[in-house]
Image 1 (cartoon, one colour):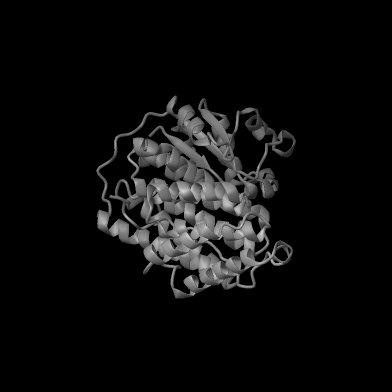
Image 2: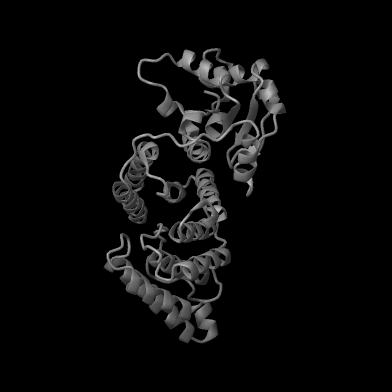
Length: 387
């Protein structure tokens, strides 16, 4: 069946996974070839791939850090990525190189002779704010949207339970990062991504899996950052940011509920927070709270951003921190990651800044870093339903 073929290295599976989610949501599940799910046990890879490339109208070549780092493998005739791209270049189909956020361009000099023509194709970068709309527009010119199939899906209630479980897993991973248990945190997040891959084909409409996917990517970035892998962390922050931005821009017009939109806006704030752009982070946290005033995690994240700004020598907004802490206590009961230990930590931070603002200016400047453990944002989607 004519559709869209996604080619990628295993090391770039997280970027490819986001793409296939968007494409299946827009064009239908049977029009998007995803080898993790569309090659049945016992089938011959070469035969299936060759057939699906020939029957496709569009071919997306995901070029991520794994693709670049392993480009020497392209000189091996039996390399699967080389086989897929060379097969596509023989066909009269739309070919789009999709550059991950940490890849700037393709070099023809580094590609085998039969693949050099790939560099002549106009690429799209995931870091482009209009990446999603540009990609979809180009694909819509050659691929027709398919009507949803009458396939078996999970009951809505079951899907919601699994989604909440994913949210708890993500918050738990952030807590493990705070405790310095990075290996265990990454295990939790990889388990979450595996569950997400299994859930997508069975998810009932409107479940909002992409919002939770954004938070999983954001949490992976926190683990990598804590481990000192800044470049990789930046890549996952970019994936999270792109995911959240798409949900925000789609808005109510695409049937998204206010909960999803507020969660995505808060996630955009998390991305700016990770980039240390605290003023923009605070702006987006406040925007999320305008939509859902009882969004406990957004109140926590607002507190954390104000605390970080003060620690960086910026304005000390004690009033906002007092309000945010009061709201976390009021709205965060029984929420993962917002228990008594977290509240005690926030109280300690607030008490410190209250003391600092009472000190004479010269003494206050000498005490900008609180003695308590730095606050870390759970950065979770909300589980509060809007009315």
